[in-house]
Image (cartoon, rainbow, N blue to C red; front, side):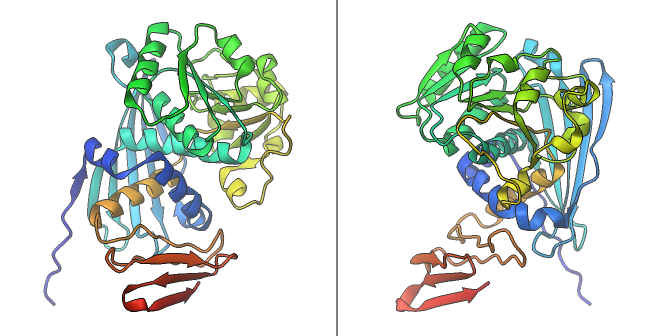
Amino acid sequence: MAAVNPPSTVFISTATLHSLVTHKSLISHLESTLPPLSTAIQSPLRHAHQITPNSSFLLMPSWSTSPLLPYIGTKLVTHNSGNSALNLPGVHAIFVLFNSVTGQPLASMDATALTLYRTACVSALASSYLSREDAEILVMVGGGALAPHLIKAHLAVRSNVKRVLVWNRTVEKARDLVDRLREGGGFEGVRFEASKCLEAAVRIGDVICCATNSEVALVKGAELKAGAHLDLVGSFTPSMRECDDEAVRRGRVFVDNEAAAVEAGELVGAFERGVMRKDEIAGELVELIKREKVGRRSEEEITVFKSVGSAVVDLLSAQMVYEKVQKPETSCGFSFLVRHRQPVTSVALSKDDCRGFSDSKDGTVVHWDVDGGKSVSLAL
């Protein structure tokens, strides 16, 4: 038998990744793929190793058992809390993707950018189910590398936001971020401001995002107004926390995945102090998307979403990036999935052949109009 030439391994740079991904497109991809594919992805608890008191090394492996997602992947991450003083990102990462059928390496990509995108998009996706649709004021706590991604992702799902307040321990850093957002454009009708007083900003915030390395509670639950949504991103060890127990007590708490209950300081501490029990966590992100758990129940309810990240989301995000690199011009961008149930069917058509698209209300039939006036229908 003739030898099969292995596929060439590609490196996907930061610039290439930015050219392929938008926050809106990744949010849509995760919302479509998490429900049907998350159960097919095996993801052991991450390996976390403390290198120094201020640095850690994480390994996040995952692999898919579904032929529709034929990948193995692992993310290698370093976290250095002192990097802000060096004007460097606190997190650096690389993601390596393999073919799960043959084991051949397919790609490596700058997972620092991938992590920023996927983390922000998970938060925004949760916010689309948990924050008020009429939210107008977004408060960003922290001015690091993740902050602009969180702001852009949340603006992608909450179009009524007209004011963004940025708070950082170093006011100059908050001002720098505000300046960059203003200069970057693309946010018509949105006013960006640097806030000197966190408490005052939290009191008026409809959505409050936290992305810091803090080990001391920054957001006080007593300051949260009725109807607020609190998004906690920064902590990933029991010693870290971005809000106090009162915020957890007042809010209806959701998590991105079960690891949050053992890794997030806000929750671990709340369990230890009897503020809440593990079984009082209202649900996980996939359950929200599948409508197995109810999101926001009233305009006055306070909601809390705690994310710690997962290799499942890494693999799905890497899938999107890699497949866009492989077929940058041939697909019309349609990837059709039965809404939140198996089986999953993905279909790509030639860009030149695509003329129109419609689907049935229950998501079971996809219909295309193609060249020559012909029509194609597929029952999923």
